[in-house]
Amino acid sequence: MFGDAYLAIIRFMEQGGDVLWLIALITFLMWTLIFERIWFFQTEHKSMVREATERWEGREERNSWSAHQVREAIISDASDRITGSLPIIQTCVALCPLFGLLGTVTGMVAVFDAMATQGGNARSMAAGVSMATIPTMSGMIASLSGLVGSTFLKRKVDYEIELFEDHLTLDH
Image 1 (spheres, rainbow, N blue to C red):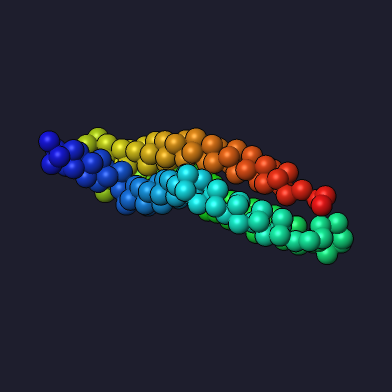
Image 2: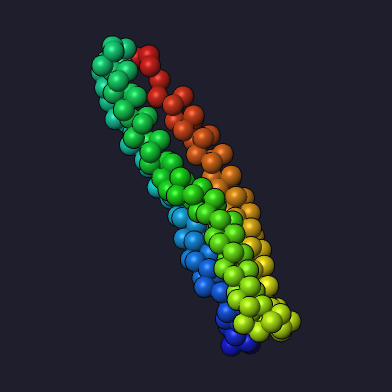
């Protein structure tokens, strides 16, 4: 059972060419980072907000220019921690279709090579065509799946940053 699935995956990866391995690596990295952000919100986020709020509430004076600068620094630090690896995730989402396009180009090169060396043998051209279409499809699917995850995270990050800013009151 497990061996059959493994063999099917290996066959699929071989049909797609070397670029498919890069798409798989980027997809793995992207989803690892998405799950890391979800884990952050489930475990560390509340304590981070509590610590930052206590640091702000511990100040005796909160109305001067310097107090506003301290508040902005606390918000900036918290925003960076809340955002985390979201820019890397969004970069991975954008890279997947580009690597799919690279796979298309390399697959078409294989088709043209087969046409030049074997005179348009349909069997040899079919391998190149699958090497051209599989990475394109895989890059798009990986990108769409990552788009769902990154959109969810982007909304969560924006909401939590806005909530945190509102949580740090200016009055004493």
